[in-house]
Length: 446
Ligand code: CTP
Image 1 (cartoon, rainbow, N blue to C red):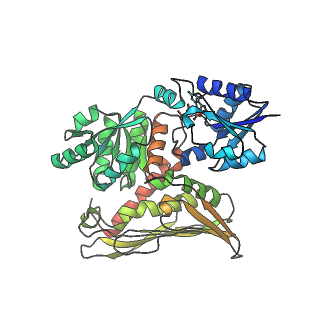
Image 2: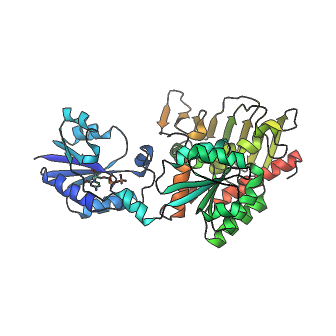
């Protein structure tokens, strides 16, 4: 019996897929089709898959060509599958010519001609109009957004807005996009905005963008007052728009894995979370000079509070803050201690003090540890009472990680994916509430 294997995502099943499977089956007597998992597709940079794994498997099965369907969940699996299933022929479409020649030591490799003028990418683009996104702000974060946004299909960065003409001109020139100093003109050219301006301006820009009917992806901290957070989410809901707080950890695949393991009982009941993030900033940078919105907690607090909220919930009994201040009076190092009915947590961040920057989750049966940069989770370990018993997990984290956040923002806009659970409205509102308490404790204006 000649056994054939092929692999693919098979998203939005189309004629090209059908013809590929038909010819693959004809190469032998028994066809195995490997369908990729969403997680695997994410790690290889395919971020906008529309159909669920079950739908994609169903569609492959419906053709009647597959004798067996398996799932492909990791790089390197093909080699093992070939051995495991005693494969004679490996085949894929001609878009992959050369890519799998290394398998020819183990079986025959055949590239079948690809069907012209059809692909899942084309269908995805046809189904959902390209989102024209505009950036508010021209600072360092805005610069990082540009290359990452290019990697997400279905989105096109249309323009940038900053009231300061020279900054706008330079940014627009560097990235070859349109520059605007007039907010009305800017809104006319776009469907959604990415707000990357200083913290204190977020609230105003979110409101104006929503009022102009634009979806909003706003950098963290989205706003610094609970009432403001509630108001902007309510406004987005009324207008049927997506408002999304950009805490990139929330959308990072490795962090999703960590949360899943932490919340599945592996380490028992979670009793303590310690999250630390420090970054030494130049004294002249905005983070250390803005008298109202500067300082370590407003800058990094969202990152360190986020896992605490995810793991211990939003109903804390008390939050206390302790800070070390610099000459300007701004906090250079802050520790927030959260007390819950059945646990405690500390969120530590620093812009003028360097620490190890670790995430530690302690439970009744064991603990999870992720070293810096855990906020871009790519590796973590699970430890137990017996120090020799250690489970190690890793997940790829590509580039700067903004691509995952942008991709989830897009799936929410197009209503093709369910990403809202990764950072809920209620969690964003709670985060704003803690920020507000911190500002009050500091007796800052604003
Ligand atoms: N395929 C094909 N002809 C097409 C499209 C795909 O023969 N027009 C083949 C691919 O070469 C692969 C299989 O179908 O062997 C599954 O491909 P997949 O990557 O799932 O489909 P694409 O349409 O290429 O998806 P995308 O646009 O997301 O890359």
